Each structure stands twice: as C-alpha cells, then as structure tokens.
Length: 82
Image 1 (cartoon, rainbow, N blue to C red):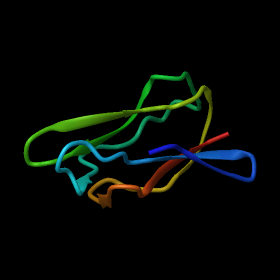
Image 2: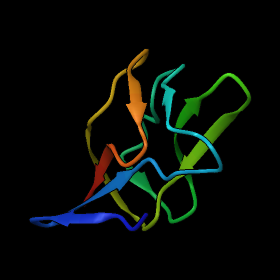
Image 3: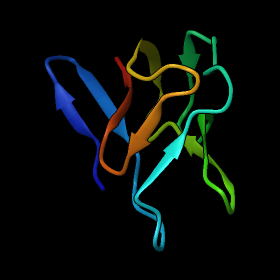
Image 4: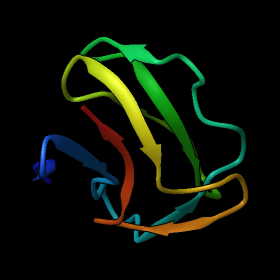
C-alpha cells in the first residue's frame, strides 16, 4: 500500500502481508525526531509474528496516530512524516 500525502506530511500506513488483517502495537513508537528511509518506526504484533514497519522516506517524525495497545487494521495510518 502506498503512503498517502496530507498537506506537507506523509502518512505511513500498515501494509497487508499474507493473511494479516490487523495487528496490535505492543511497545512504544520511536521517539527519534529525524528518521531515515528504511528505519523501523513502529512494531505491529500478530499471533504469528512481530512486524517492524519502516519509514518509507526520510524526514521528521510528526504525529503518532496510534498508541501502545491499539489494534490497527491493514491500511490504517500509523505515523506522519514531514
């Protein structure tokens, strides 16, 4: 799933992998302000695996759109990167 752009921020969303329909945020998101493309920014947990979601672009981490223990559906925005 391609990230969406809102104003001057890019929203990174949870992509579908195999049969996965949703996952849980088991731990806190990165607190680093500047991220590089490919850097893990959030972990999504499922019964079978933990998936590190990577930043699709370099930039400044903006709004964190999910919190620890949230259940996140495929396609849901996770963070904004400006």
